[in-house]
Length: 218
Image 1 (cartoon, rainbow, N blue to C red):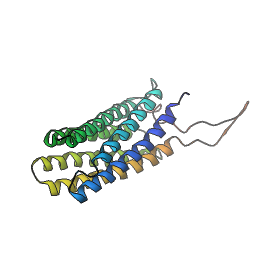
Image 2 (cartoon, helix red, strand yellow; image 1 turned 90 degrees about the vertical axis):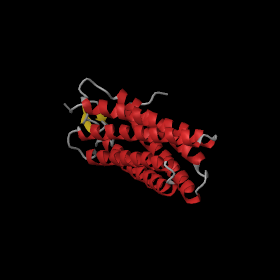
Image 3 (tube, helix red, strand yellow; image 1 turned 90 degrees about the horizontal axis):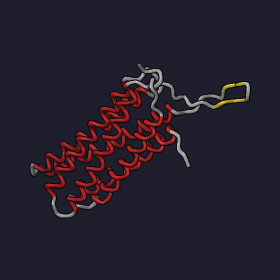
Image 4 (cartoon, rainbow, N blue to C red; image 1 turned 45 degrees about the vertical axis):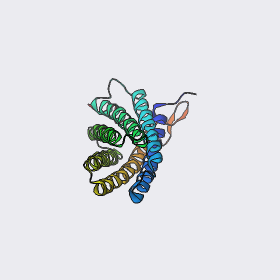
């Protein structure tokens, strides 16, 4: 079974949304209880997010054309960075669970920073697009994901400095900001690939996707 680029990008966005929600639920349990409860959900959530980011990167690569310009390249690079960051987060939390809490927290902080940078690249990619119905949503969605990720990195730094209460609060806020960003991104991508009304042709009707912004950029 072969998937089109549009299908991969849409599926990746939904999987990213599910992963971010699972991570936020896990972080909520951890922050409220002040224990390791919820870390298993955080690991699973980050793993799912990394898978979603990878699907988006692959889908965008399939859609890449010589006319795509920098917007598409920024988005692809950003998605792979996000996948790397989420994978690093999952590894860091797993290390925390296995007893090396300080080492795991350092890795987790690094992973969140990488994820935030990746989402920032995607936001820039969306900014470089021509004006469209989904452009503002894509910028906002990726911007919130970037902000939430950087807050996660800051929260881990507070934890490393033995300021666990404020660190956990920042981590909690950061994960839910990422959920908000994921929801906005799902809406943006849904609009981006929403089928246009059928066009009358000599051979009947055709059903083109509304995807045209990247080919017209630069």
